[in-house]
Length: 422
Image 1 (cartoon, one colour):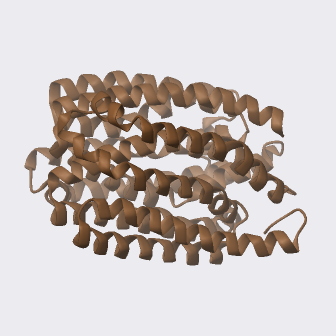
Image 2 (cartoon, one colour):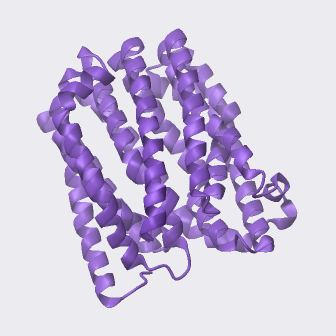
């Protein structure tokens, strides 16, 4: 396992380095042309996109990876899975598009303080939303075939294209342009994916009513339940927390928090991408040695990640002016708790992934609800008590508690099993 993991990690590191570079350039453009207030709007819209995307995907992206991985050598079953997933996503994405069209005015008022100019943004999203959703479907299929290198190439190429469009839109259209660029990024992923999918599947397989299988839908029910809790409800909680930041600490602090989350998303991409590309398909495969996978992750990925966080902390005074502007200087005091919380989050990610991949639905839902409840109430309470710093402290506290629960659950499972967990 070590040799392929090293190769994938090395290639993924190149991807992450490029992604970081692209992200740094975009963040600087946002800081210069949009400012902290505009960045707060960008953060709110990103949170909203997570809600509608997760609701439309129904959590089946994990099912796509799992079943494509299992049935990649069985053409009949693979066609059945692809058609069922494809038609479900097409139906759900069209429903969301209609919701966006008819709810555009209301959504604009809720997210952007009744700015009518942003109504058009939701019309753009509604038109592109089916493509937006199928970008995840396509890259999940490639991932399911365990074409790890292709997944990384897709992300690199689409990120480069998205960067060029983002800079153009931010420069000429400021906040509105930044918001449109968020909508366009997955669209580029979709079209790049088509190139890599042409030798793996046929488009007719995806939209075949003849191959639609209700038994596949039944098997997906557990993924849907987990997605509703983690994806939809979780995204709603995060959106509500962002609203609380504006209400309790002000719009500018919300923009500073969004800037910090952008930095966080860049380095967490190293862990989340290698988890999706390499570890999840391994865990989802039949007869996988989950105990070995856990220890492999903790001894190879986490130490590298932890060293990176230490470097970021000591260079934070240089990172902030490079990425943003003097308007974001107060972000420095938030780094310690954010980084500590993200380290705990990275460690716990392997355990949450195992629960999803092995369909331990009840355990997953209970732990997610507990963590989301802790996150919301601790964030609200600490922000009232000590201001914006309270939200990053709540972030650390939440993942500390979550990790304690996970260690307890998996210690018992590992102790009673020498190989598999499920």
